[in-house]
Image (cartoon, rainbow, N blue to C red; front, top):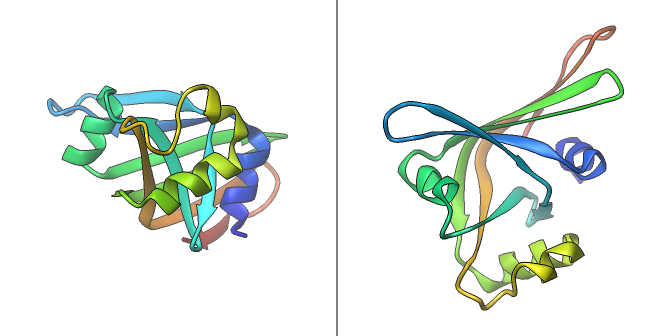
Amino acid sequence: MSKAYEYLKEVGTFFLATTESNGQPRLRPFGAVAEFENKLYIVTNNQKEVYKQLLANPKAEICAMKNNTWIRVCGQLKEDLRREAREAMMNANEFLSSMYNVDDNLMAVFYFETATAITYSFTEAPVVENL
């Protein structure tokens, strides 16, 4: 498992930054993450603006903080249309079953196609992980 996945899973809530078509940044909380086929995945609803933003501009960044450390995952997201990827997300985040099922045509999963995760601390050097 990647250190970035473990960090995000432990922290619970992280923030995803995207960009609107007019260049305005948008930041919102997310709470589900999975690791599938050695890639870091997130999930959203394909009816939301964040979904449209990621299709238009796949560059995104995640940020989360815990215990005087914080992580930034920066890269490009790509939608995975496979049922297996949606199943992996559901298996890693049981609470999603109250919002989605793998065949509802609403659940959209994205993975970081290319990404760098950097964990920072107030007292130690940053730790870099290429995903």
